[in-house]
Image 1 (tube, rainbow, N blue to C red):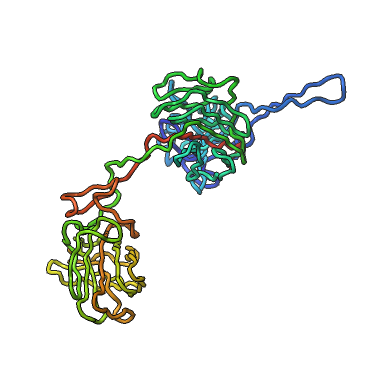
Image 2 (spheres, one colour):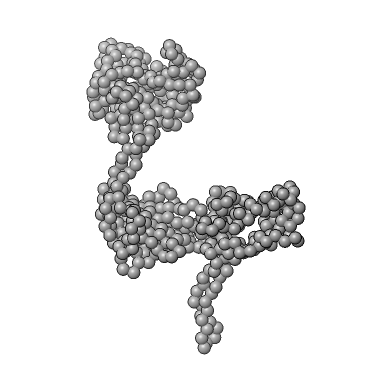
Length: 489
């Protein structure tokens, strides 16, 4: 663990056990358990009755050595220490910061009391020594980064379901009820964000809580947060909505360890998805569904033809081979897309055979003249049941980056000449729904006609792009808290 002093003026590390510009000495105290005050009531009987314990503000002393190469350097370092430890008027309090190797960071705001008054006995040409007394109004070390959890309506039914993506929480039997772990060793303040539509909204921790009684419209957001002066309930415009709470509201802190959090919202909505302008995938196949043309596609075998509609129930076309005479297994369908040196690509297409057949996936980078650049890559064998479309493909992890001289990439489904079966009169072999992307793994097929996607140019004759999506108008309740610790070590 490392200890720092931090403020708007800068940051310094207080090092222990070795030479440093700022050394934390052995007289440091007060960084363990903060002072406790217990209330005991004495009556006429023996002993006293225990009425509870509260934690006082923390008093601590920081034993700091400042060491420079000479008196001027030491003076500059000392001025830096003073500028950080003594807060500026109107600014936030300076912080003691504890950083762990695993990334956890805890903070302790403090007020400077005394100790930075240099004396002749405590300073020398290359070293200044101070015992800095501080007081911490909030005595517990508080995590810098808040943890969060949420419940949301993910389905068409009324009710809220937990979203477990961010915290170690688990579903319970009751809708909207989750078990939540606070990894601190003392309780933590927790703030709430309620996003409509929906309501009323009861919220409780271990059976104690409050009800926000108002029914929110879509877009309304309520924030409930504890401040040094009390609990504030505000809407998205900053208006006070405390009056919308039910009778006798209680705002419990989140205890250390495991707690049960119950959240409900009547008339909650799952919302919907809307595309953004952020492109997350590009399908380089210019005629991916073969609806209009076969640009970029080729097939090898007898009786080549392109049919505009009818690929297993979709409106996609397909590039098909039909055998007018019995033939050996050799046959293939391929698609070619532009590529550049260093490209790392993934690809897939759907293939359909009228008879059970065995195919292999092959890839090849090519130059301007269409000549191969680098080796032909062979994938494993794939069994095709008769009259059953099968998606075959290759991930970027199976391919090397495009070598020098690359301008194109071919992706082929080829009948295995060793394990494949001979073709009879009337047999067909077809392919469609091609996709080549710069993603690490094969993705689900899309083109510009899909919801949340678009064409880079002419529909059905250009690359297509898939946009990122965001959920809108979804009812959610989120909780945010920062774990707190009694001590850091």
